Image (tube, rainbow, N blue to C red; front, top):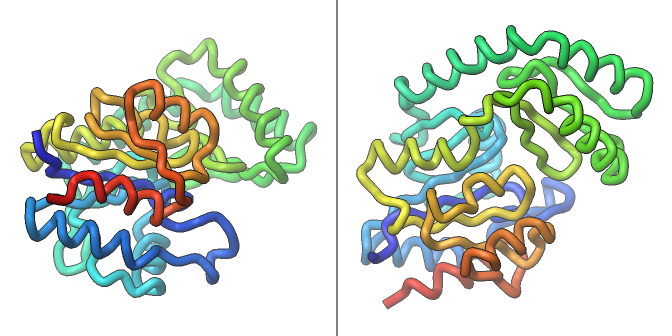
Length: 257
């Protein structure tokens, strides 16, 4: 089956790591994707942990020549983009909200224990956020590893709870709601199968969508963490030799006529 949908993470996969003001997306990525859009009608999804305001600001700052057709925000909510405005997939987004309201209310003991641990045993910054009762930013990678280990240990009594990690940041959600299931919601809405989908990611929070249940074609840039590279390699995906958007452009070149 030919390619019909390209789903990319944003930070680390399109935008390289580093100071935000100095980052950019390479022209080759846009030219290759535009060719696929024109020749094969490929649809582009940005699947990110950012909220709309943050993503929109970056798309404008970077002067993207065209915007994605769909976005996944906060690693869960789905929106179709029309005239550079987000139109919600109401059924999916309302299901996400209902699942999280119930779950977060039932796991009060977990949040209390995590806040006590973070306050007394770490230098992490943490707060209540729009999509999670607790969002955490560790002071460095070593502390993030330690916090991650503690989270996984303490989550064991709450099987419906999951954590998404991106670099030193953490966010929580229902185990059924993640980048992979959100991508699946887009596919169902537009009638595209996993067999015609490419997914590209670089970090822990991309692992759920880097699964052939959601995308037959998997790829990661050269800067991807080892766990992502192994996930892509083990499923016969494409490991790019270039970082960020240049690496994704390499993957897209495989689908050109």
